[in-house]
Length: 314
Image (tube, rainbow, N blue to C red):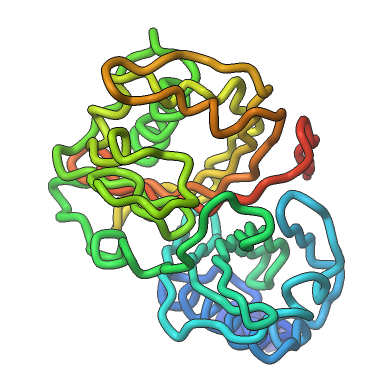
């Protein structure tokens, strides 16, 4: 009888997991659970209350590639969080990500975040915040590409995780190497950077480094000009979230521009490097929408950081 009671108790311990500080089951989190975590984070951020997300301040937290204590930086200064966020989940690696517009000190900003769980608890939070004082251009319109990003990919058009990350990787490789294979762009592909549509847009804002001759082109045509090779190095690329249902890959990377002109576009498309005459680096959170093996949408949140800044390792 004692043995039977032990087995029943053991089974109950597995079926009814202990709760984490935020009320999250201390076991694996399925898709709805992960999306709930994302909403809990946004609510906690808006309330300036990191303890509502996690009771532990030992959560590995970064903002713009700087390791901080959970509750620092945007946690203190955020004024409002938009009610609409683009959320994407990866149950296989227990991670959830989002892109959302926020306000800070009365000014707009964009936030990209990735939360990682361990045993059902938030274990890591990596954020990229694009602010007007650290972004050469910013529209803070997080919903510009939301319809495309949030649409599920038909099952027959979905790809394995490795194929999705390889497609995203081909984009970065071609950015710095004009001899690399061309990424597989969908004919409808658009790229949105800090809320600014930088493709198929003949009227870019004055703050954009892209002139109308370049920004009016589509994704493929821009790459064919060679004008985007102003980036001298892309490093610390990580693919730590893949939402196969939506065909989304979230990548983080650091872009280096050494201040030296690289590549000249043909025709009336001017040298992009002329707008960036000094060495600088950018932390980038880049979200790729891949449908039927082709890049349909690219949404990036970008912030300037000191040139050559080392990537946080963990």
